[in-house]
Image 1 (tube, one colour):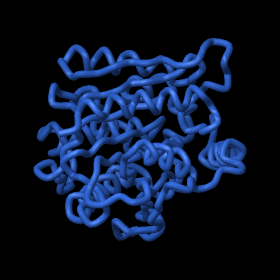
Image 2 (cartoon, helix red, strand yellow):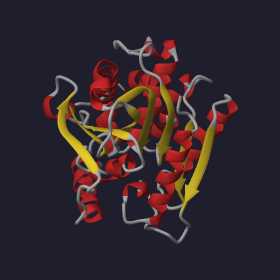
Image 3 (tube, rainbow, N blue to C red):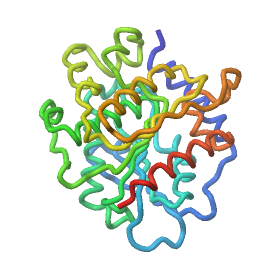
Image 4 (cartoon, one colour):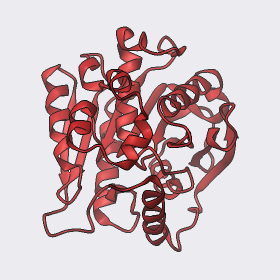
Length: 292
């Protein structure tokens, strides 16, 4: 059973190797450490866009991964700036992590971020009528949960949150290397990091993160991806099939090959991999179909 401390150490070492030597692209403007909420460094965000941008433009919000216990916007900056190079404004933000801040802190912060976008996005080149979202690993779980909350009023009632569903609409999303059926996942693998996130109120929390139960046909069009060497690979197709059964426009992709261990979990964040470029290009092309 891995602990949050072990997870943080191993993930940080791998991310440092992945991003060594990378710098801000010359054609990108970045606005760092903007505040969207009340929780200090955990409620800071960066916004990236191409130089010369005027007015509001199509926007991607990134919900980072890290097993609910790890991750910051700094870890995702180069991935997010690569998306901005494809012609989007990109919002890259921190949220509170377990075990210091277990469920529902992360989802509260995601809601605060989207509320801030509804209130202030137009001041930062964000087109609130053309919002898209990406999330990977635990971030894909959190994003899928929040998208279900935005599009299902019954799900919203489980939370003491003012969700801006009348002011925010996500046109399409990319769910990358994630886990979605949390009840089934906890039955199979209640490891140290997931236990740190859920806390002691297991059944109560599971009833509130049982996203698959609350997904409806109003869920945004979704690009669901994984890789052959992703340890969460088996979670992608069931989510895709579930969305498809509800009539939600969706695509499913699996990248790499059985012998390509470098194309593994969240490979799309590795700016040195051709497969990352292919995946990110395809996701952005998917989003382009849903610009209003």
